[in-house]
Length: 132
Image 1 (cartoon, one colour):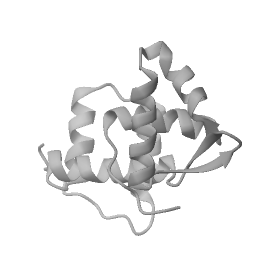
Image 2: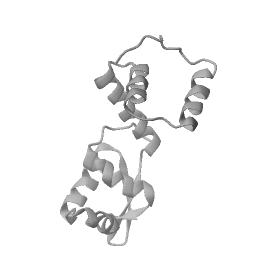
Image 3: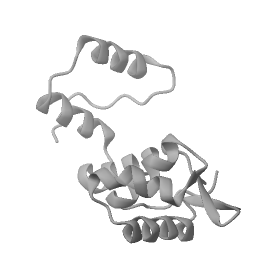
């Protein structure tokens, strides 16, 4: 997979359609986004923009183009998560976790998973007095 570009909220919607089913023709992307009232030209503009950014590639098949991802969803999520933590929490992931724990109910399964992750060897331990 290629370098992970920054993608906009609208581009995320297009990428989600492509990640779900690729290779995929532009008209199929248009059809899937029609329920969200996206215009065909808007979808095609987004596809072209994502190709220029390197997030999508395409293959010619007859008189149509089939689009496929050049970056994985996982890589894009990692990039956006890192960017969010840097911008909003000053690069401190522990503050992010504390914020969410204080704002939302966390299931017992999620708490167990977090404990498992934090107990893994090589993980840095955040100070317990963090306040976002």
